[in-house]
Image 1 (tube, rainbow, N blue to C red):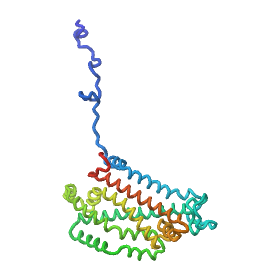
Image 2 (cartoon, helix red, strand yellow):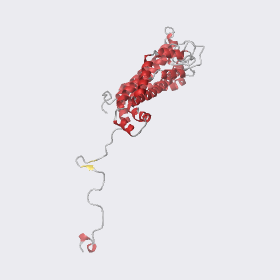
Image 3 (cartoon, helix red, strand yellow):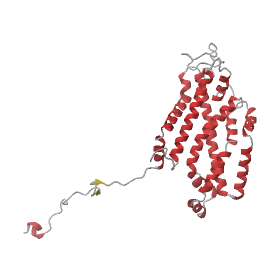
Image 4 (cartoon, rainbow, N blue to C red):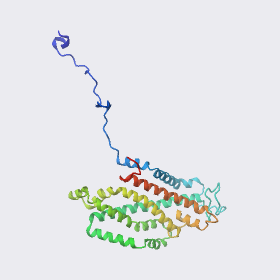
Length: 322
């Protein structure tokens, strides 16, 4: 019997393999476990670049605070925005009325919170609808071309030459302060310039191979616009939406300030500024409180738009190296 060969020359029983146990592959040069390399997701990359822009983060914090104030600001006081205090007419800020009162005795804190919320609803609705409408019209005109493109561009250029502010004033002047009609009118006259910008950008996108491949495969033009062209100009649409909020707030505030937009008993930042401008010397808090909120809103949105532009633009160096 040979011990090396086991009993009666049989091979030895299988046992634990000599040498290192099986495990993850290692790199002999670094003696470290090799892990698969995963790329950074697109949205995570955008977020990282956005957060590196300090002014954009400050703008986002301010905007979030304004939204919280619009949602819960009326709960900070026991006065409703339309509940007058006849014992305090145009009263300065006090423990009972933190921001003072209006000439009708309404609590300015509650009115500012309600007016900010109404202005935000109008601005977001107008900017969102305008962005969608301009994207579909501008990208559709670029893809269809021919007579469709000529008709759309002719309509855009004609409407851009018309004094839209006067038309908006005429249409909403007799509405009695209906803010929903104001939203419809602002959308109807606000899509032209963004559509013109999107059309010029879509001219380049339509020449890409994936758009031509979709055409060769029989994909309809409407589906190509929605599935291929618009997603590839999404960064422009995001920035356009953000800046559109600022423009819509300015339009609503200007019209309401002139008495052509939102009217009492409904309240917006424009109506508060209009009432405060009449008593700027006798009751300055009535003007400076809504003016300060409006300034914070426009500045924060401008900061956010600047950060989004840097985050979404691959050629921008403002967001740092991703």
